[in-house]
Length: 205
Image (cartoon, rainbow, N blue to C red; front, side, top):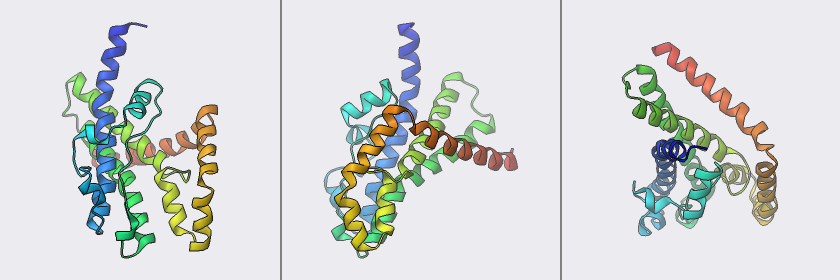
């Protein structure tokens, strides 16, 4: 492997990765803050500074093996007037923000205004990372956002059991990732999202 090409390709991936992570975590914190939870604000997480949202180990894994994690935004549901509703809104805020960024990136790419290879590649990675991050986090496996949405939709007595045994469901996620079976879940959803986005773009371009 050409080390220079490896470094260059990863440098071009960084902006898209950092934007996807930063806006995702900021959206969680800001949604919670708008519903009365000051926890994220008090810990300095309502910021576009990516350093505040990076988990060093998770970030290195994202770059090297393409799977990792960011530093979760602290949320305290006790501040929500309606706990379940609050958790659903906060949990969905991150993935929905990723989808908005993906749509914006897709429109910029399709417009043809990016004639420089570097800027075109950066916006392409912004599109890619935001779609993947948005879809992946909607899956109903702990600790992903989709699991919190799923748990909040359950009757309270079943929600308690869900959180009691969530560590075992977390193992299912790890097994799916290690064995590669996650691809059979993730890629069909990614392809559907891309095809839907292309149909939207076709209306305008």
